[in-house]
Image (cartoon, rainbow, N blue to C red; front, side, top):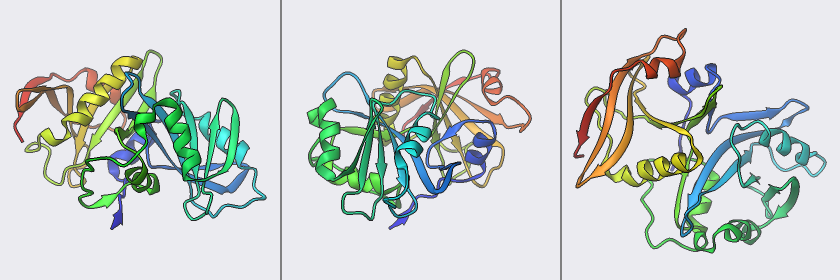
Length: 264
């Protein structure tokens, strides 16, 4: 099974526009051997609130001589939203985890040590799920596979976000194979759309869904306010031709949206 490749023209564009983008690599300036891939995931089982975890998967093997605590704190301070804790992973080590919580770093944790941190927030997150959505083509990262083995409840990652003078803006990204003028969101993804909308509503974040194709440069489909109406998805949508010199969020604000329904 292949690992998902997230870098493409649109994620590179977002990075250039100073968005935080999930799945990107970060490197601590004081030590290039502490490079890691970063993601932010949010979880929910039986509580009304969401658990937010910043996750670092280190690329190089664990080096006991390296000051990972300083590096992890440096990485964690760079994200524009609050997380409950930071989880660091060295996937090829026996005790492969570390957790930064409340300013304290606990290292050399095993699977059960990490699960205890999740269970402290909500015990219903721990255990094998009765239903696992099949992995169609590829997996996202090590944590993606690990969590499917040990955890249940809802989990999703944040694709991109940015903080401006007024708000924190969240982007949910879809990368269909077909052209965006014929693409509509799938009902099978309705839980993700609705949970992310609830997550953003609770924390007063602005949410925008974006669909784009690698075959269509600088053209995206913007859709907002996704709801489930009977057996269909309802939302407002518009197409945006990207000008690299424009303010991306401002360009979205100027769009004229129309109502659309997807029965896929």
